[in-house]
Amino acid sequence: MRPRTALVVALLLALAVALWLFQGLGPGNRPFVLGLRATKLAALALVAASVGMATVLFQTVAQNRILTPAIMGFDALYLLIQSLAVATLGTVGFAMLPAGAKFAAETLLMTAVAVALFGALLGRAAPEAIGRTILTGVVLGILFRSGATLIARMLDPNAHAVVQAASFADFGRPAAGTLGWAAAVALPAMALALALGPRLDLLALGRERAVSLGLPHRAMVLVTLALVALLTAVSTALVGPVAFFGLIVAGLAHALAPGARHRVLLLTAAALAATLLIGGQWAFERLLGLRATLSVVIEFAGGIFFLALLLKGRIR
Image 1 (cartoon, rainbow, N blue to C red):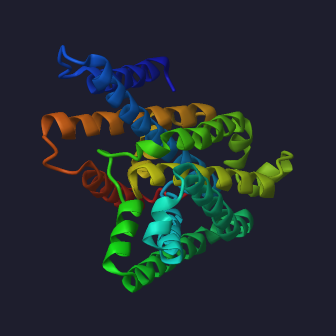
Image 2 (cartoon, rainbow, N blue to C red; image 1 turned 45 degrees about the vertical axis):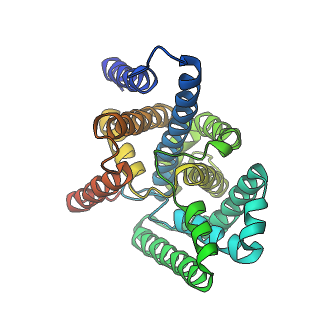
């Protein structure tokens, strides 16, 4: 990335943060208001960075820039886990679960299942088999969602409401109670992804080239998928499933830093995601008075962006 471009991205992020924290701040009780805004700001930034980095990592593994973890069924798997938990423990038992233990169990289970399902598929798939990989991921996503829907239909209305509340949120009300636990999972995962930057550069070259250069391809794929699952679980637990936000951010990162190393690409995606999410949520709250929903706009814009990539033949 050019220094001028990096400076512009940094300035835009700083502007979004400043607007979020200080716009409309009155003279009374500033520490209390700033504390609330800072907590929400941290949650949005953590979600944004997690989604952006997870998408870049997953696209590197899949050797395809139109894929996101949501398309491959990660978000649907999270919803299925929520439905199973409510059906097994009941509404009271589910509500009594400690937030930290619940978040840790969900993250570990999602990571284990995701690596088991997609590790063999993407670790051994040849480049020409990418179409089969996409189809398998879509089918698994439909299977997970169908399972969650089936379980939800068997629950009583109160239990179904609990599932809805646990599985879906919005950018206006991130789950602040799990923010500390989410940060404890996401920040080390992001640091590890940055530390693995040179190996990710080799992984992006393709299986044959990476192996010829001495990269343990199979192990690297599994580690990267585990990071994707961890970061996806964090973002989903805080604000709910977001299918196309990562696709937009990853596409912008590749456009602003063409041919960049993965460390630069991951940081660029995280910064762009934070800027768009914080700035967008500020605009919807302060300028539009919550008369619209940011997640709906993101999904609509992301769907158009996805179709544009398909039409341009950007499958690689």
